[in-house]
Image (cartoon, rainbow, N blue to C red; front, side, top):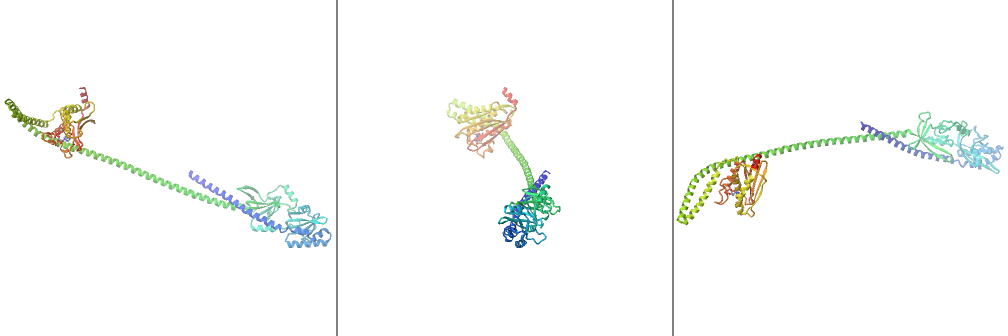
Length: 605
Ligand code: ADP
């Protein structure tokens, strides 16, 4: 609504400006044209008068004129003068030629023979007589009193031997000029010093003031008889006159609609005569031209506004499309994010499933391992039981034999018996191991402090570690770490791990054993890392199998890890090994921590 109103106002404003500019320029060009015309008219007027300027001189010089004025009573002289004046008038083409005596009476005239003859009349009151008598020459426009024909009077004093004799007058008919102007089709008027139109292309304007004048002034002007006996018609030619748009406007109410209307006025002053030539150009066509221009400009503005509106509309459509595009892109991004989230969830589920799978597999492997150990344990228990009796008997017999040999002083036999005693010692150790392996866990309800177990194990291994020149790094949190299981078994497991690490580092350059205890989410992990030779990748799966050993015969039985595995499993924990060959091995023992109350009980204890 507001936009439409602004658009409408804009169109109107453009139209108005175009009208004003075009109108002003039309007026300016009309004035310029009129000025040129007026100058041309002035020149033709001047040329016309100039043609006769020599005549008064010629008349005053003529012998006949002089004779007639010197002898006014001589009919022959007057006739001769009349004759020469007629002849001169015919030849020159002037309106009339006459001579006046010193009193202003017409003595001889070119029209002496006509009814309107000037001879005998007295024009002493006419300025062209008085001025010529006074100054020698005069020029004057007047309405012919006898002839009733207006004309331009050129007069000259006629000198006699005893002073001025009279005045020679030539009347020039300006009607010819009017006819020429009329043919040009223009509306022209010559206004004299009294502001009265004396010549015009419109005959009804003649002897009317330009604008109506005061009646007293009108009477004064009439008394000069310049405009004939009837004087002037005091109805102003122009009804109103005013300046506008850089020009002069006039309204003429001539009675008939064709001659009435608004006109652009242009005038040229003729200072020589005290006259003005005025040109009246109808304002209507100029205004019509300006109106056409205004209409064209308004149409142009409308077209421009339409184009602008179209462009704005287009811009809006593009903006809407872009917004739609953005919205779509946003939706796509949202969908992509949702897909991504779904994907992530799927991945998480897959990972979870893989973890569960792995756990299931571990559990399965554990079960297999447990089953292996159980069946082996049963077999070994039998073997251990069977062997331990004879070994015990053998040991008793051997002790007796040694005693006998000592008594007899048989040193050689004694040495052999001592060697055999060592073998029996090893056999006893072996059966002891086998028994431990085969033993069923029954004391899993005991709670022990892991930190204490670690300390004890390190202390018990100190001798071996020192012998192997191993540096120990212990990193363990303060306070008790309660776990379920027999503390002696726990120490046994740890001692086995420390001992294996020491064995692995026997020939290593750096010998460092790092024991790190970490508490996390209800669990405790003991990492035992060494800088030894490490474990070959192929050995890792068999590490916890019974009798798996890489040690030379006599140094290892390959039961340590498999026993430890079983013990840890009974405690509800796990034992893992990882290694990079050449960079040492790390065993991680993980055990569940017992509830907080147990910790408190232990702390109190
Ligand atoms: P044993 O010590 O009697 O050989 P274990 O069951 O304790 O029996 O160990 C089995 C095998 O595991 C060892 O022979 C050894 O090859 C390997 N092993 C155990 N601990 C380590 C370790 N820290 N570094 C390298 N190898 C090890």
